[in-house]
Each structure stands twice: as C-alpha cells, then as structure tokens.
Length: 208
Picture 1 (spheres, rainbow, N blue to C red):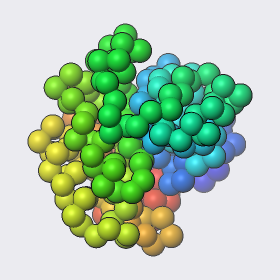
Picture 2: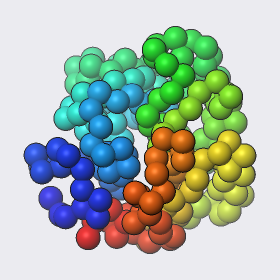
Picture 3: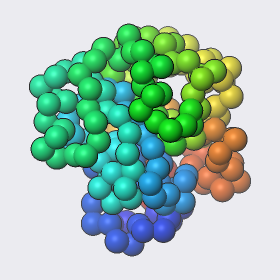
Picture 4: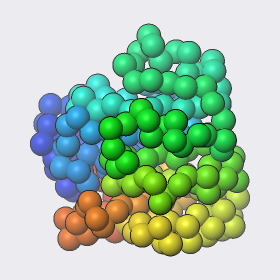
C-alpha cells in the first residue's frame, strides 16, 4: 500500500482496505491504530464491499452495530462479519436500544452514509448527541448531486454539537461527497492537522 501521511501501528501489516475513500484508514490514523474500538455504522450496506468498518473489525478487533434499511444486505453479515447487523430505518432508531449494546455512551467512530442526502440529514437530526459521543465521524452529504443545502444544515448541527470539520468536501473521482469530523475531546488537532483539506481527492488527504 502507499505511504500514509499519518502512519499508525499495524498499517505495515495491511494488504488492502475496503472503504470507498479510505474512511477506514482515516479513522485508524486519527486514533493511532487503536485496537478493540467501537463503531456505529448507519447505512452500512454490504458487509465487506465498499464498507467503512470491515477493516476495523477484521484487522483491529473493533466491534459495534451495523444498521441498514435493506434486509437483503444485513442478512449477509453473519456469513462475513461478527458485528451485529440490524435491518432498520436509521431515521427511526431507538437510541436507548442502540446504546444498550455498548458498555459506554462513547463510541469511537460513527459512519453516516444513507441515500439520498436528505435521508442522511434526517438520520443525523435523530441522533441524541446529549446522550452519545463519538471520536471520529465521516458524513456523506453528496454535494455533487444535491448542492449545498443538506451539507450546510449538517455542518451547523455538527458545529453546535462540538465536532470540528477537518476534511471538507472529500472528493471521489472529482465529486465532492463527504465531510470528515473529529471530536477535540478525544482527538488532538495538532496530531491530525495533516488532514485539514478542502475539496480535493481522498487519496491526496490520506497518502503522501
């Protein structure tokens, strides 16, 4: 694999990663290759293909919940993953039920990737940030399809909740579609400031 801008322990043993835009490597870089971490994957889709949490589980022993409205996708998880996959509408989750799965109200990584962008925003608005904290968040706003409206609304919410935007309008094939956030309570800006980029390809954020 290419050389990372922010190497982490265990990267040298990886042969591949699985996220569309190296979200998995971004998370591990921010958290120094943390093992036994936790994730909440909303809009999880296929258990391994273009999946933001498969690498975390497979190589770093992370665990958590993967949730998607499409039961044909979540039903595939037992054959490929140890993580619990739930067929559910992510905009209507009972977060007391979600939190009961974890031993803490702090989760290391939140992946928000629903379709279309207004549904992702609706899901974001339903998250009780007064009850639950995350260290790192990747949020798909699909600006290239929907313009600024949903992106700007999401950014206001994250700012109000104390999350800092580090990589804005992350691009894939020149299409700006995601924002990447960190929680300054758990991640030091000085450590991850190499990721402070706007509207460039994801590989230029992650790799040297």
